[in-house]
Image (cartoon, rainbow, N blue to C red; front, top):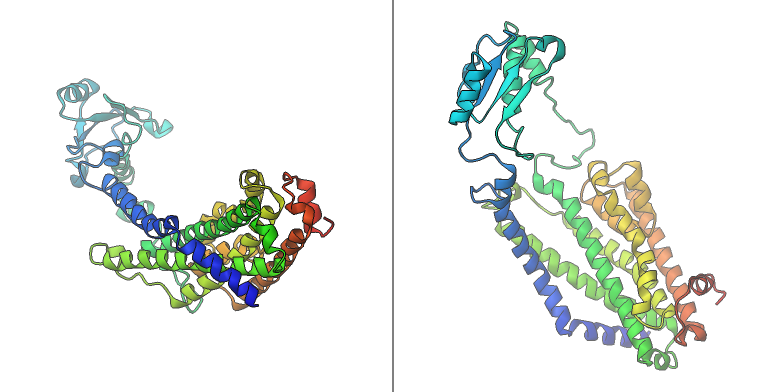
Length: 409
């Protein structure tokens, strides 16, 4: 135990007091805030918005014209007269278009009731904003088709008014609050980044010590299990520190932005979510740190570890592909399966916890499977370090990797 604590203290101090760690710890959230602020101003509703200029209509929106050759449109409703001007024939509409009185016009042919065809003419080409006002002509045609039937028209425009009632004691999520909808995405991406970063530090530490022959010296005085346990706990605390700082920074920004952002007014983070977040982070990190340590035992240097690292982190990426599905159906079958499989459960379970109430038995099974997996992986990786030929600078090969995992190395 004392030797493991020595490894823990040394590893923690070595990482935490690096300048690069301090820069990452504090600059990453600041840079993220600056980037989102810039993109928010670019993509805002201001007239000078770059994105707004691409996808929005011009500031001076000209009315559209209508030529009805079918006799269907007797009169344009009052609420649309400033948006849609009716002309007696196509030549009059075209003249108005050339003079700039209208920006475009529609032609309803005589056989419209049989075909439903409408011709739309305009002088410019804008694939993003070209048809964003088509609801006006649609509404006028509906009104003309159902003249004298206001109730029927109302039902066609809005077939039903739905009121959602949750049968559980607590709702899954307040659908009206944008921030509550975004929490699963933010939490999932944060966990993905921190687990991947922390476990990668384990790989870097192991490979560096192997290249410098420090590992061989350590193995003469401590057991592989003591070394791995000390390193995993130390780097886990480092990752937990990152999580606390980044989450605290994000929460502080959310609190300070409440006055200017209505969506943040009722936004709160449950203390239970933070507690479970620490539990699943440490367990998820333990799994991937052990896997990274296993890679470090098999490769002579960090450069050779790239192909094996790609294979290891694939399960960590899988939940990202189902993120939308999990946010919409946090207790669905896909969410359940991914939250019980140890390699995907840390990220998946946090996405579910931030979206809904997860049954206690599912959380208990997930934690149990994670603990068992961490224990087995640490034992397996310790066995790899015991095999002296794995420390002889050999290049990585898959057969050696499999044999070491099953204890035949």
